[in-house]
Each structure stands twice: as structure tokens, then as C-alpha cells.
Image (cartoon, rainbow, N blue to C red):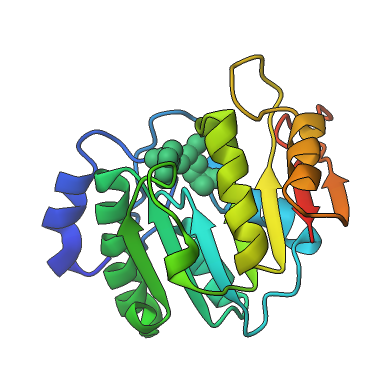
Length: 212
Ligand SMILES: C[S@@+](CC[C@H](N)C(=O)[O-])C[C@H]1O[C@@H](n2cnc3c(N)ncnc32)[C@H](O)[C@@H]1O
């Protein structure tokens, strides 16, 4: 990456990053957990199942560093609002906005906004209408009741939600069947589940649900 960003890159990475991001010139984030799906590989698995992103407005809930927000713009979306309750993640996303703008000569600051916000404490309605909501690996971070309240609001705000489920006994909305039930209860009707096999032949434990 451009030398002018290196000091900030080092400082923001002291505690590690959630996502693996290649900022160019060998400057790759150090991730806390090794997982190929903590990077753009996941997008490449999901992409064909996502709705058409061309000229779409997207709200990316639990965006963390925003890697999927930027990728949505690269794949044709017109605008992404990324929300995350982690102050550090939002600082990293804002940093990525500067570096990607510099690397790609794209004015990302006109196409993406990142806000630090706890979605279980704030209504999302004030952000207006979007075409698509990304809920990648985040719905199970919320208490069930809060997750349903959020889905109910999203039903009024977006046409489509893309939700990642997971195979876990922890509390919250985890399993695809529970998420599907919550989606129906909150007004979504056309629901599809997509499961993925990893290169080692094992099933990826976080399938994708698309609901309209
Ligand atoms: C498991 S990470 C997933 C990040 C990214 N969406 C992905 O799929 O790689 C969950 C993210 O959701 C954020 N998060 C958890 N609870 C949240 C809440 N109540 N409001 C906003 N963000 C939240 C976390 O800070 C974290 O960045």
C-alpha cells in the first residue's frame, strides 16, 4: 500500500483484524483466526446466490472491516451503508475506504458509509430504504427477540435479505430452520437456503439464506 498509510495500518492492526485483507504490496492484515472464509473467498462462494447487485443500495449489518461492502460496490452496487457496534472495526473500515480509494482510483467515500452502531439498541428505520440487507455472520450475535425486531424493521426497508446461518448450540438465531421461521414470522415469504461444500468435501457450516 502507499507508504503514507503504513503507520495507521500498523496501529489499527495491533489487536489483529477479523478479515483477511490484501491492501497491496504485500501488506495483508493479520487475522485472529485462520479461516479462508474470513476473506474474499466467502464472497466468491456466495456471489452466484446473491440477488443482482447492479445499481442496488445495500445495508451491511455487522459489516466489520467492510470487505463485503466494498466487494458489493466492485460488483455493481451503487451505495452501501455498513453498520457495526465495534469502534475498532469501523475505524478499520474507514481506513480500508482510504486505501482502496487510493489503490483503485475509486472514490469509495461517495459510495460507502460506515457507522458505529449497536443494531440491537437503535431502530434502523431512520436510514431509509435499501434494496438488499446483508446479515453475514451476525444475526446469531443478537438476542432472539432483538434479531426478530430488526428483521421486522428490515421487512419495511428492503426487498431482500441475505442472512448467514450457522451450526451451533449457542443462544440466538443460529440454525437455518430457526432463522427461516423468524423470517416468516416477520413477514418474509420467498425463502431459499444455499449450502456449500468446501474444497476438502466437507459442508461449510454457515449456509446462506436469501429471503424476499
Ligand atoms: C462474526 S462477525 C461477522 C462480520 C462480517 N459480517 C462477516 O460476515 O465476516 C460479527 C460482526 O457483527 C458485529 N456485531 C455484533 N453484534 C452487533 C450489534 N448488536 N450491532 C452491530 N454490530 C454487531 C460485530 O462487531 C462483528 O463485527
